[in-house]
Length: 304
Image (cartoon, rainbow, N blue to C red; front, side, top):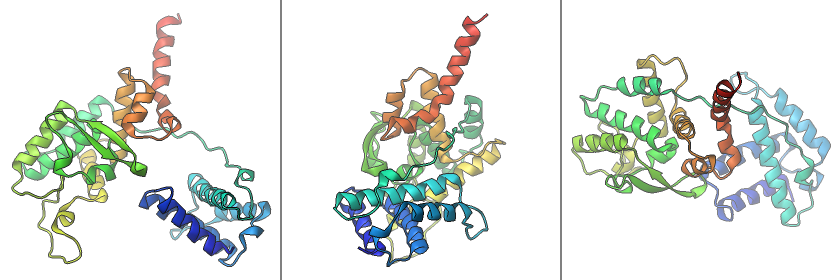
């Protein structure tokens, strides 16, 4: 089987059998196409060998992108993970090729997460002018991100009928189409209510652009007015600058802050894993910086 055909069959498997998200499939396609460009689309997968993989990894390490910047170590690892996933698929389907287990992943330094303190959060929320409808919307967005720990894509996909402001909880389907329950704080529910009360429309999306959309035949009106991931990122960045925060603040920073606050107040890591929608506890363990702080407090209290 030629490499081009193998990649195509693997991506179909990811879409239909594994039910991976569109973004995951897009990433796999990107990483595997780079391997194809390196090896040639007509390469027989039977000829994929450890020396070839080693040359490819060296190529990745020396590769320069369109901005003349090298690929980050983490990005290089993602390329190798995609290759291993495809090889596992081929072996499972009795296609003779290199065993994925022979390719070791390099050790990467454990990432730390950036989060906001309570004071920084108050400054961020306080930077919003809520005398305008756009300000009511932006405050509701910030409060919702922090209250729920939603990913930005999960937030932008919300419709009005998705949320129950009485029970302050609702279900979503997150990354990998995984369902989970999300909870709103009293303050977040109040801010959403204030925003919706100021709206003069019956449009479905929970958060919409305040500017009148251009006439378009390509998208229905509801999707034209729905805020995009980039719009939400720009809103968060705008108020972080206005609040004078020196940290890089993104929607994901508020997700990190949500998880950190839970752990600092005694939540167990398994519960936090569920609320964040992480498939693996390993992903949630990046919040060990919180545990470290608690260890320091114990040391100071009992070591004299």
